[in-house]
Length: 211
Image 1 (cartoon, rainbow, N blue to C red):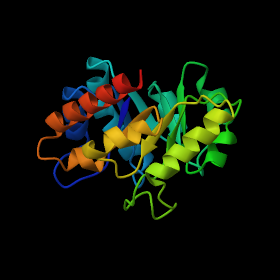
Image 2 (image 1 turned 120 degrees about the horizontal axis):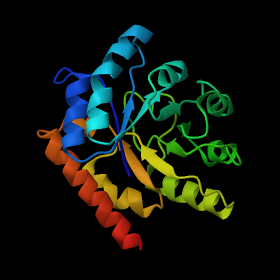
Image 3 (image 1 turned 60 degrees about the horizontal axis):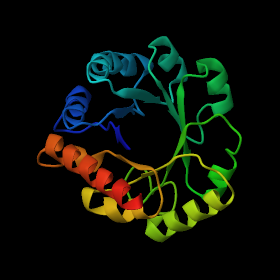
């Protein structure tokens, strides 16, 4: 499970980023444009929605529930300060994908019984967008959190996020998480298409080892 999170860069437009990761085989895109106006967000979404449809990829918006409904995308990812996921579910319906941000086991436990599809748990290591807000978790932290929430019979899929690279995937997946979300390591790679392919291959290897 790989989610690619868009991030403005000097090298590529958002549409170019999405096109490359889709070519690399990624099937799950999160459009994240924190500082954009709704109209700017809408215009970028209009560029990437056809790409996702053509490649049969899921597209979720970071926050922007109203826009997600308006543009009929698959769902949203909600941060701690965004719309309550229960309200989002009521507004978006049963078929929508709804993900939530988590930094601790307690964050995940609070979602027990809620109609949420996954949590993005992080940050794995320091990043300019994540770790300034929350302490890094690291491998031991992921292992402990996954163990705690699974022992509490919480089976919500957990996606690791925050500075993860291709080289990290075997160890990160060994902690018991269900997938990873990546952004900068893909965008900054010499060949983002090939890098995406290698990430997906590493994830597949990791899942096979857990069987």
